[in-house]
Length: 453
Ligand SMILES: [Zn+2]
Image (cartoon, protein in one colour):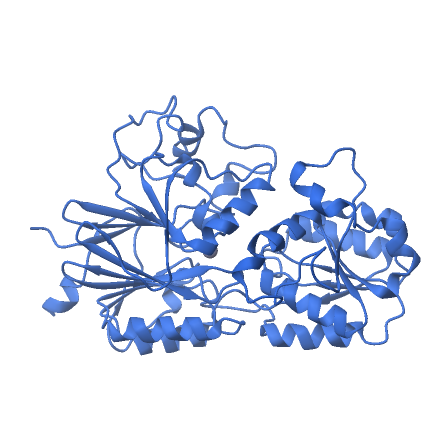
């Protein structure tokens, strides 16, 4: 019989787009199913130019932005495509975490295929979907799995281990096949508040003596961007806020719950209230019960955090619970030194009403732009310059650094190492096995080649 194989249907020489197929005899499972980001995707689609909602698979297959896999897509998503619908031939999809590049194409998948994920991951996907006009995951046979408990799919056994990442409820996996064990890291770091989870995962993974290690390498190779630990971000923001007599502004990812906790801590210890968007408030409220009581600040329920009332004509139902207590631009402007306002790029027109005094600090608590001609980055700086705001870059990456990745490869001693989710697979080396810079859509037998040598 054929030995088990792993096939990469995305996430090769790109950051994002993870789609990993594992086959063991008749049993076939996928890990993650997310879109490619720039530059692959944005070579054909950008801004308002997007695949048609009536024929999404057809429009993505045209540019090889999706894999041609039968028995995977839903009838509806396949409409008009030259790939026929077939009853599901994939027996489960495991989602490592709720970031778009891992879960964003679930909407295209046949609803009969079970989707396995952490309980928190599901809560987060629901909260993202209910508050986003564009992010939809579709109907599925959802199967939530408790941390570290094995799931059987045919002869395959999958153990989800929680890891630290820039979104809560992220997982790495140990996959036991009929001929050896594979480890898939998902996206991870160990310089955030759940570092101990990552360490426990790596230890458990090393204990399995894995044949194959599928390791993310977002920061492998040249890594010029400045990176702090989460604690480092806290100290840096504390420094910026100290003795400032004006409004302070920040921007971060609404789903980066750790960063929101960090900003909340810095704001309150500096005598300020953290002011967040209704979307952030909604996400925090949705996941709060999964954190130790009182440890996650939620507008309306916790001190030191409020919601900001943007000026707009109509509000969504999910925003309503936060509107009564929300602060207006006039209120924030009148007493700026009492607030740290977290503002998304799309909400910058509020600055026209807020008019922060020249020299007010602006903390950019997100990744630095990947390219030099990043449009959003240019626009952001134009706004900051126009209002004379003082720019501070303060971010902790969601990913392990190059030297940390090297140490993990050495710790796990896998016979074959497959760098994924990286633009620099060549930066990986291993003393105990072979590093394979995999090709897209080509099946790799588990363990075999290394065993024979
Ligand atoms: Zn990712």
